[in-house]
Length: 246
Image 1: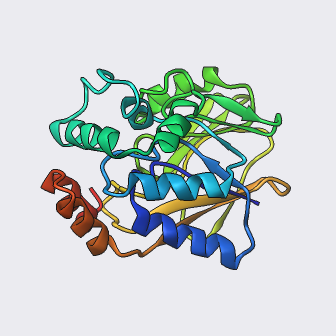
Image 2 (image 1 turned 180 degrees about the vertical axis):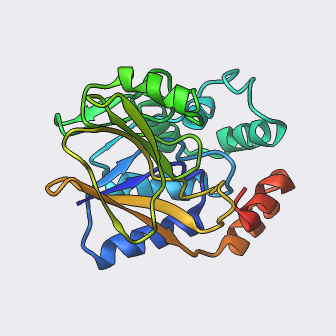
Image 3 (image 1 turned 45 degrees about the vertical axis):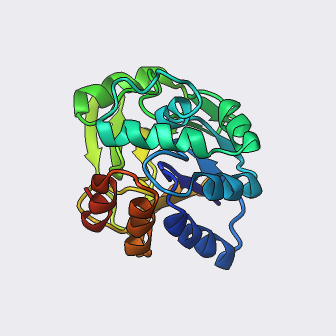
């Protein structure tokens, strides 16, 4: 069983809840889709935990890149740029080195499935519309590619024989069975900054043997995470959105 995480964004309060869940179920195979840092107030603590997790595989996100590459945040919003600058000044030497050495996606896990941060065609692209999703299937060869970046759980199912693309939504806690004759782009949502108007953190488990996946939504101390953001002097918008899942 693989635990698929994306967009933690320095949210220590949320990540601890995910790790407690994994420990209770003896899950120790972690797959990370990028944006470990940015926005939140605990970049070093989050990166320390990620390194201890020893992920099966991970790819970088645009915020990970921005926090170790000056000038790469020009397209970010003001709150995001402020968080990048602050995070860059907070990172320990070993955590900065760790971020710098996270590989760019997409990548394939032992021929089983692929992962990317944004589109498998471009790590900075948001897959928000069916047309973008359809084009993105050209960016990987496996049956399934997990991606992040949008902070929205869901995905696309491509029936190539029937030439039909379907938009997917997932019921939290229910298994979704992959069809052998289809290909998939799947987003597990965001651990650290959900944006689907549900403030609960979001991640997925993937049963690689039986080719099925499950979306998980969990409460966490979003008030504590928001207070930490304000105490760090980061933009108040970054704290406020945690209360509303936007």
